[in-house]
Image (cartoon, rainbow, N blue to C red; front, side, top):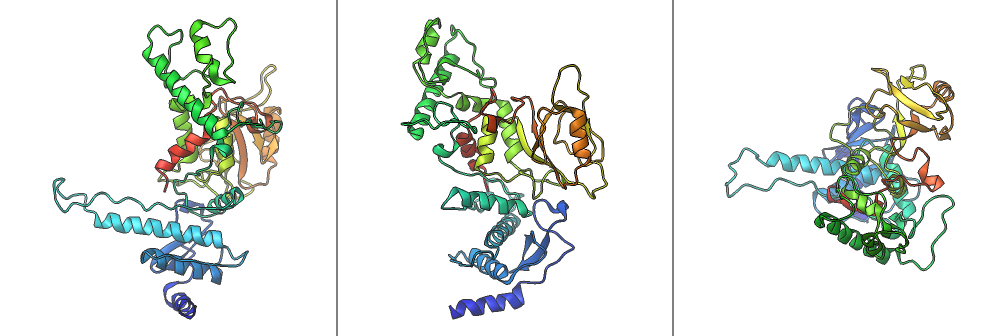
Length: 414
């Protein structure tokens, strides 16, 4: 214990420098909401005006342990900012370590060289928690930092399944007794693969099958009790329980939406794209479930402005006839809304948490104009159900399986 204390003391005086307020470190430096301090020569982006002593001590021990490939066990009282200290220190070290490895790797060496080292891979961080509430707390802390790693949350099928016959979602959903979610999921996905291969290999099939545009509904998607006036082929298929949400994962549109929603790019240079109030680049289990229910529903689209007098520059369509709801027309160039996030005909469902799904454009425009919030937070629907699906129980026809989305994200996670 005495050695540990002397180590912290020397590190605090020599290796941990003062906060530098001019330069910012992290993946979204243009936000200008963060500070920087140094530990062991590693620049750490920091989300608060000052670094408390326990946080600085944790950063010193973490960085030293990582640099020396040693284990470290740390304990700190509640309220001392453990989550921020751990996340910022480890992510800063990860980036520093990768740059150092890449600098030693010589891509100009002959490809057949015996001494050629493989291209360095970024060390992967695994964050374990005991409860799902701790996962949510970690994600909340990550959102406040300037770091946006490629992340994935690995939850059980019990937590991530959205099939209405297994794990229905929504405020009025009822728990289905006697269901083993894991076994049921495995059975349905296996049958879905068999059904897919059947359609692709059978020329005489009643239904043409396209992986990029899989069918929204097939006889076995419910309880597997089809019959009646169905064709002989459909009666055969309905006896096998399948999953429409697993089937949608082969669609290019779902892959693009997953990428744009959950995978931060390497050049996040607009403060309207990422920020403490935005889900961009940092998601939780509930974000995965909401996306699965309706991939076209984008939540907490954040627009930051320089001051309260600056307009957001959002252009809305005028309601015609009996058309209800508020739809986006475009964004004025150079204004906060002009960041490529919104597209024409996106339907605005919430403004700063208030439900505006049934309000007209004029009412929504007045609400946005009178808003003093910074950032402005919008929930939008893009070609989906046009409703707040995660709460009213209605699914998009293209609802996709959150469990297998998380598995796919994990392959490239940092």
